Image (cartoon, rainbow, N blue to C red; front, top):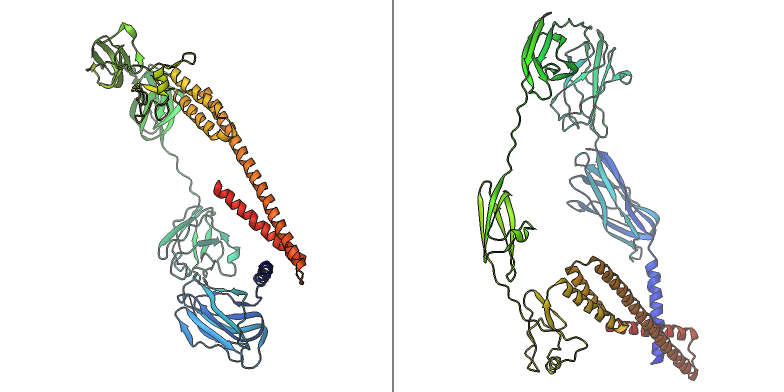
Length: 625
């Protein structure tokens, strides 16, 4: 049995070495097809090549392509005795096969040249994919293909926009002339071109002197073909004849031929005639008002004053003075005359203060004499129900009533402006449950209280009704009423002091369980204490609790890490012991047989046993965790 174990280990090792050798060796034979880019309607030739091949007797490929973009029309120039023909094809694919009749081909072999004809539009692209590649040698044995390189076929945009033929000039000024034309397309008269190049010169423009002409600045972008466009060339000299021409480009760019050439002469400089003006004389009572003319305020000019060189016509005069209303009139100005304006300013009206929007609240209670709280503000003993509260702002308000021996009362009341809102409260007497005294540590427990410890579940939980009264004390399973909670088996009032006592109890229990074996129990008590301190908003104690929890989490992590290291060391020791025992047994058996077992085999097998035993121990540890 041990012999078969050693032999099996060697066989597995050999198979693994063979698989690694096979996986690392990649065939060097490559099959590839070229790429092509050409214009719409043109034809291109690409080659299908086979590289680094030896004793090649047969080659077959399936060439796939986008039938809406390109079509295979012919094949030629094959290195095979029996070259490929287009006899098996379908929509978007063609099968090409070539064979050797006598001697196998070596090195780089051309399967064939493929003639491709464009059938799509400018910008279209198709992949040229080689699939189902099969190579055989002269003995019809398959040749492994290491790499297949596919190609692409792209239809380029080679069509330029058409030339503009109706360029016209009009609307001259002393320094500008306006041009109009009909927008050409991108490809001929279709689509939208990309950019205009408009130029001008004092000489007639031709293809030969186009580069020397001056570029116009700010040409508009081309519109869709057929739309009339306009552009004004500025910065020209007066009384000068200019020639204008333009070219259009697409995104490639393909540039159109030169447009028709037009000429126009700018106008001479014109001296404008003087504008007739007049004067406005302004005064006000009181004086010192700011002056505004047609919406423009003059700043430093104040009444009384004059405004000269005012254009003839109707104008709006405005006067503004602090504490007075703005004065405004329309004044007519005539040529070389003065228009007099006098304004008596009106003081601003004194605003009447708006009284606050308030109402009245009338509150009474049964019984009377309850303390009153309005929106959180308590009135004290001076004002108790019944009471009337005046000058209360309109809107929602919270009313609270408190009377000793009765439950607190709270409601929301709506106050309307100028009205009285009524609220009557019927107070509910407060029921105070009897309290079970908590025995002090110095007082001995009564027999009934000692029997209380025998209740099932154990004594100390007031919050459920599932306990069994084993001592007939009548206290097992009681529930605390509203406003009380359980503290060490007794119902106590829900006050901040009692809750601090509960948190102190949890911290005490946490310290009792602060051992490696009970870290989780101690952490649970810390979480309970943290919840209590959150409830009573004790921020300082919360920070201490969080620090304790963080410290305890570190202890738990260190304990678990130590356990893992200890278990790992034990697993390594046990695995080493098993491996050593296995090696001793193998050596003993080898000495008792005539055919010795190689020491390297024994060592390798022992290592395998060590790994297996170690893994088994790790699995058992993980399952236990």
